[in-house]
View 1: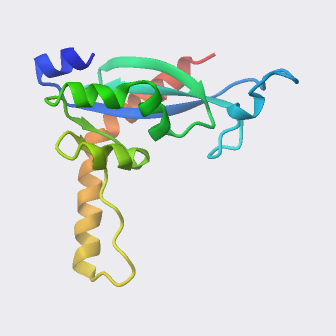
View 2 (view 1 turned 45 degrees about the vertical axis):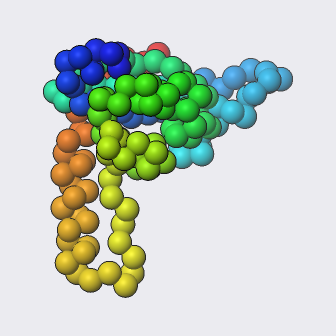
Length: 152
């Protein structure tokens, strides 16, 4: 997928989606790993990639719901793909701030919120930058919503 994105000059959209699952059987090793910190339910997370027009490029690498998006990207080898293919660019959500710091020219995350002492102009600029970044990423959110609809 990364080779395809580099060859076709496609900017990727990356997101992790949580899907509720049945509670694992009692006594199963790692049972607590499925309890999501965000939803407080038993979930699995799926990493999803789409192109700029919302076309699904990859959906897989399922993992227990307790694992953070950033950790999953590292364990699945996705971060290494950015290192190998410096021409690939991606837009991500705030769950991937560390990835954006590590690959500043390739991965774009939403800007951090200005502090309490920031002036109104800084706050308006932050809102506008966040809105633009969100509008560019919305296609992967819609892709995730469609996938959740078809989940078991």
